[in-house]
Amino acid sequence: MVYIENKLKERDINQSKNRLIIAIGLNTLIVIIQVIFGLYSNSISLITDAIHNFQDVISLIVSLIAILALSKKPTLEMTYGFLKAESMAGFVNSLILMITLIFIIYEATLRLIHPEEVKGLFVIVFGFIAFIVNLLSALILKHHYHHEEDDHHHHEDINIAAAYLHLLSDALLSLSVVVGGIFIYLFQISIIDPILSLIFSIYIFKETFPILKKSYKVLMEATPSNINLHELIDEMKNRFDEIIEIHDIHVWSLSSKDIYFTGHIVVKDMDRSMEVLEKLEKFLKEKGITHSTIQIESTDKICEIFH
Image (cartoon, rainbow, N blue to C red; front, top):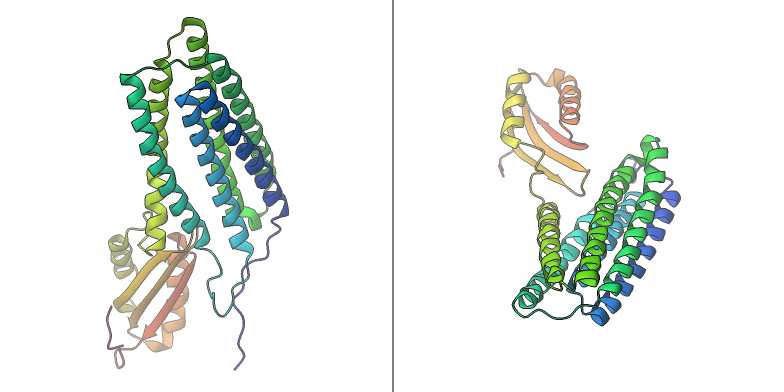
């Protein structure tokens, strides 16, 4: 018997990795600057925007982890490679972000009750810098995923496209901070600052919770949301007359794009088992399942343990 090591498709990740690292560096810099001058100017909306930009950094890091994980060679100790690293990073960072948002909402509420003076000029300047950085980072990533068409980069491009759209939407939020700063500077309406902070916090919270939920489900190896297992089983029953029984089915994902299926099928005629297997694997692939492991059983010998 010959043992063949588990392998992942070779990918050239250098271009994707370099662009993400540049975007991470730029956004990390703007987060630090916004926090420092947000505290100095007494602007909670500028700090909230910094938190939002920190979410960008998290999103970009998760995208980078996903790309690196896809290229990491599986070992005998880590037979799936490091595909779950994406979801693990997403879960931990989203949880920390949501806890931080609760504190920001609390502080913004206090500012509504007891308004404080805000240095509007700093809000304008550093909100505008954040807008430029977000826009520049988005353009860097846009240039990559619009020009990369090789199928080998399919997974990387999905992550980069998502990061690009995220940065583009955040650029618009930073621009709204600038508008708020202009009102504070010209008309001394400081209450705009906590109002903007609350609006941003609710938006970020709404944006972050689905990521937290999705990454939690991946870590718990739940059935992916895009797979209806009841419908899948019913369709298998109706479509494959050669199969008389289906049991011990499990469907789970290891990353945002890697869906696995295992199951046992009892076939009428073992002589046609390979034909049935080939059809079933093709059917599962059409349903979005990227990797399937199927145990074929005869009516004479069915496994005794059902899960």
